[in-house]
Image (cartoon, rainbow, N blue to C red):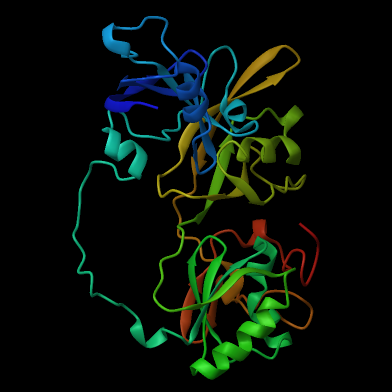
Length: 332
């Protein structure tokens, strides 16, 4: 196909909002094949789109065809604002080298970790690494394990919908894995933890400001949330709420960057700017709470609950509701 000898990722996006770059090749035999093969490359949920430059140098070198980074389906379009505005979200760092761009390793602060390090080694073979199907399952995971006769397991949150369930020994973990595998409605990707890494994700709680009261609607809120991640805790606009200047929505994201951006709503020919800010309070997933017989959380009057010796603070009990949505109480 040819040999790549230079590559450059541009700092800015093009007029359509796509990330783009250039690469140069030598000894190209078939330009059509180059374009087809490069356009078939996928990087996670992204794909490459290649356009060959209109001019060719001597000895068959193609100089700097433009490469666009596009998300599959409609994700890029969902990121678009209105009137030429775009919500600012950096997918790739600018000015990456060829190795950095295609290996996923970017320049920055680097810490070398001992290859022989094995933290929490005593949990190897005793822990089950699993991803939960929904936020509702996360809220009620303790009661679910009790119903499955797996209450022996100790739960550790790994971020987002991923948890580690630790059992007394490897035999108990193996038996528990069989039970968990049979509940596809609640669990996905279950496996015994032997020290392997897991994909990072976290839950971000977003405050959305600036939506006019006349269009303050759950669907509008969730559509805004979907611009920044997967909505796992839909908005719940309350008519009796005292403060209608903002609303909450919970999204699942795969980065650690603090979210503080703008978005735009198009309504009746008007473009309305709204502001999205991540709540900076410490949020604790509700799987640490115990459900009462009536389905309510075990939360005291001072908004604290003591579960297995852990003191837990709840930042937004009113938003979570009084029941474990979708499991012990109302659906999401």
